Picture 1 (cartoon, rainbow, N blue to C red):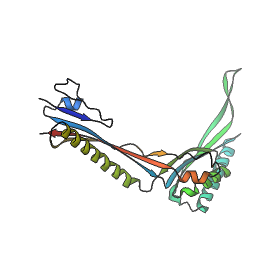
Picture 2 (cartoon, rainbow, N blue to C red; picture 1 turned 120 degrees about the vertical axis):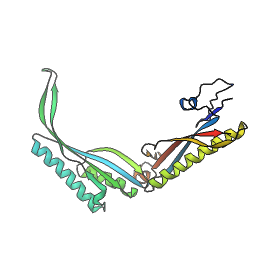
Picture 3 (cartoon, one colour; picture 1 turned 135 degrees about the vertical axis):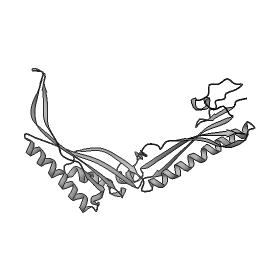
Amino acid sequence: MKKTLIASLFGSLVFTGSLFALPSAAAAELDFPHIETVGTSELVVKADMAELSVEVVTKADNPAKAKAGSDKAVSDFLARLAKAGIAREDVQSANLNLRPDYLYDPETRTNKEIGYLASRQVVVTLRALDKLNDLLDSALQQGINRIHQINFKSSKEAEMIEQARLMAIKDAKQKAAALAEGFGERIDGVWEIRYQAQGPVRPMMYKMSAAAPGDIAESYQEAQTSIRDRVEVIYRLK
């Protein structure tokens, strides 16, 4: 009799044979007894780095003034970063974006040019989270007027990704062994492995207690990152 077992994160099982359940597409192509498992893993660790994306947008009545305002804000911010000990290779500054600024006139139903907007974005990799709050304050003081996002990271990200992968593999093996034993079957080796690298590391921001609203800097140091992985394996059954 053809036998197929599929294990997932939620412990669901799909059989073919006497139970007449619908197998997966991959399982339907196999004509020998087998078991499918999905191994998953998740690591949550404390972040020790952050990637900060900020932007300055200046408005003026002509392009030259708009550009000058943007250049000054970025220049002052870069100087402040250097003074704070941020390495130049940890700072990325985008090119200038200059465009007309329009105001819609409902009476004439037309857009009227009222000036120019100049913008530049700066991305900073911060390797000491205790400096993050001061860096944000400094950015605002130097004329940076938009904070796009803060991505928290770990300096051991590569090691964590490898660890999460090994945990997912172990999870798949354990599920396969437990299911085979539970149904009185024996595993006869791996037939197929399906694996695709997971997306970017997921940042998770620590939410500071309402009892300590003033300690903003400390709240950034409690940020976490989450790394997940997944592997699908088909085992032959004896």
